[in-house]
Length: 252
Image 1 (spheres, rainbow, N blue to C red):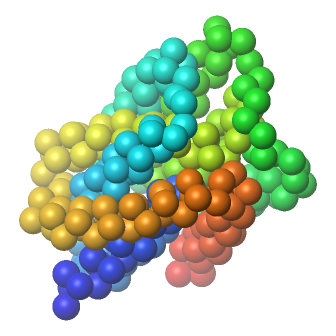
Image 2 (tube, rainbow, N blue to C red; image 1 turned 90 degrees about the vertical axis):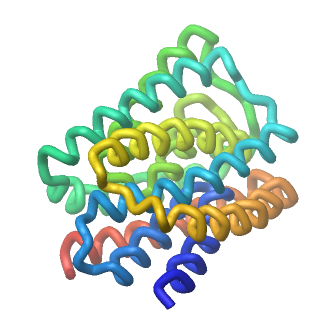
């Protein structure tokens, strides 16, 4: 029964994550509900072993329809990997409780800004020069990568928002690029937490299989309906993240 519950959660997480990120909103609470006495680091690491496969499938399918800005993306990927590696190390040393209380307010600011700027992310029109894009891409990768390793909820959505707001991507292109950045951060977390013995490898196969199915369906929907559809899914996911993280921080 435990395997069935987390596999269904992983499928829905893969679907949401493929469109706009935020799959951890579904799978991580499911893991905590099924295994309430397990160390958080173990559940965070185990979540990554399932979600990285769906993210990789999404990235591959997006790559067939979306043109990636590789001169900006390669350095950003390296920065995201290093940031996540450092964040994963830090979370094994100190508590992330302060981040738990701050996160709902950060997400609320992201939501309000997105709602206020109705044209944001509708047209793909990169705003920066090549050099400036490289610097901003590295900053996005490093900072959000650290956040993903240290805490994690909403990482994909933060990547999407940063790429739309700072680099001028539309929501579809931002979501595609965010997938590759998320692969880098997930891989770093898996390496570090796996090395420290915080991952249940026996759950990887059912989580990965279900996540791949969800990811396939989510990518299909995003590519079929485009940037406007992704924008509304983004708004919905961020709204749910606000409610979930506020509950975790102040009511639980």
